[in-house]
Length: 208
Length: 208
DNA sequence: CTTTGTCGAGACTCCTAGTCTCGTCAAGGT
DNA sequence: ACCTTGACGAGACTAGGAGTCTCGACAAAG
Image 1 (cartoon, protein in one colour):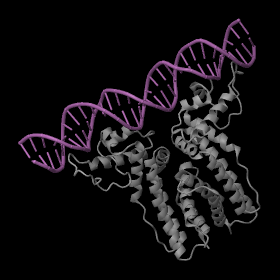
Image 2 (cartoon, helix red, strand yellow):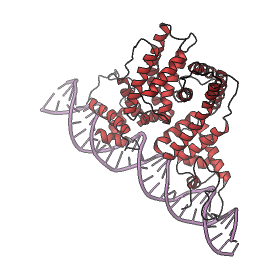
Image 3 (tube, helix red, strand yellow):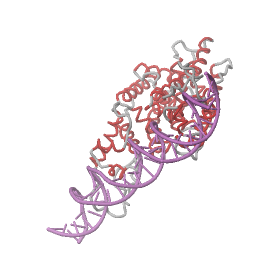
């Protein structure tokens, strides 16, 4: 046994092992190739089923190399999502709550639309039901997204824009709930108009 | 080949075949047993993976009997969800929007809490990604739920309680979005307090 | 130049989805 | 009564994916 206990969330370096680590080092390029290939396969509408074999093949990597660093397929997908989402947060600051919300959701919807994020989300949510590790990544990921959005409400609160009994946690869940629900059910588009409507209704719910 | 094209949604009777149908008839008890066993296995936290074999075993039914009437596992789960959800809708009418909403979500949350509806929902959403038939059931199911909730907003609209630019479709998706998001992510409980908070914020978003 | 541990490749086991076949049984029709 | 049709439970069977194991090659350090 080596120490494949790579936290799927935080993997800055070797886990500070007792022994100084001898032997060949981990190939970082292979790691990146796996994560990129996973995203690519998820994006490709021609691919119906995501398998470890396909990921390894597409990444030009042996299957064992995948399993050496990730315990299950769910862990690979979870880390791919985590890496992908960490890239594009960017909080707006327009000076008004409804302006901030409109811009925040416009950007969020745009990022979601161009990729096949639905399949990724479903894969992770589904994996979280079975694997504790995937559930942890999902919890961490969503918590970071929520706290970003919550910041917009807190700023508005400090400006005195909110009703005193408005609850930022509820407002945040309303916003992301709307996003997830439309993404997963797919009955209505997540376009710029939807972002604007969402922002207005959310601002109305918060307004004093 | 027979005609196993049983619409998973609507299966009132035999499909009005050209031939008057000879031979032994479908065993309705077996059908009900399959759906009930599916719900039961989904509910049981001891069961981790739902398989057709387990369903058939638990229902006291041959595996082929399942496949004779449902094309895939997803179809079975989807129909189980559909049947289960059709049971408990019950629209409140308290005379005020916030009262109606509070009661609606209180009842909805309570129904969700007692069963393991999360696993069921995840299973269906996940199946909908792969199978058109499952997607159809999910779309139909969610559409019926939305139109029930939309009715509450429409009544309020007729009473003049809504802002003129409030959009019932957006409000409905905010409500169910909140529910789905908390159910799937599980970071906050879906209890009576949450129902009350949701109702108040939603009413505030709609109010003139 | 030896040790340690990663690499790609692929064979292997285990399990589940879905198919097929069997002997049996129920609902007609004649 | 008897025959045909098709559903029934049981279980063998195939196809394919998850995850494990082993191989020879190779890279990093002492």
